[in-house]
Length: 267
Image (cartoon, rainbow, N blue to C red; front, side, top):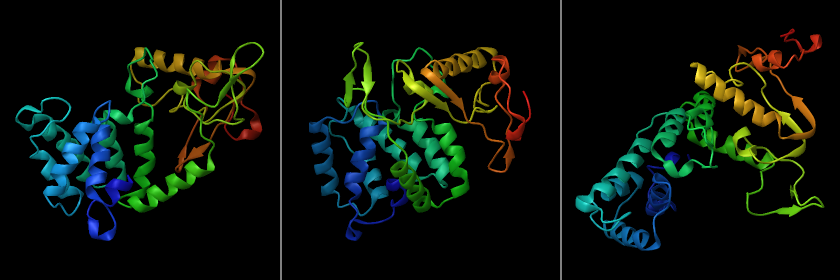
């Protein structure tokens, strides 16, 4: 979003559009450009004397050099340029997030899941796009708020570092607090788990309508619950973005009652 927000700024203003374009190209496909392809493309773009990101992208569209293979007749470079142009042509922040999800495969994480459904994308672009609707075209404010949130919240450790084994040889995280999606929590366990937004429309997702989709949502909810060794907490919201929210139907299926004082009533 930071790159999209500064797309019309030139290199004179201390912004390097070529570096921005190369970063975007690294995310179009699942794997980034090779060092050889990146340097060849960088050399070509500098010779074009581009002034901003849009000019860089249009130059990329004409590129005939090596890119993810032979790039015969410039087909690969044209496809990359079209992906970037979709992002640059997005008017609002929400539209930019939507096109990022659709055209930048490298931004999606693959955790070896068996469920190939849009509801289990990580990051959850669908929800992020809806949240971003309030920002309109204000990319700067959106980026600033997201950065502030990222600095406030604890980050989950990478899967391959900052871990140690306890006496039972189980992998245990060194950090005390983690924020993650249910999908990313698969295969991990914690003494206490706090499940946020245990509301209808989130669990299950409002995007799930068919019976098989609802069943997949139920299985993902089960994954989230079974991460807890000792304590499991549900956090519910009675209102969000001026809309009334009700408890998840899954809570009623589990036989759980919502306290009267919560303001949500009993399921």
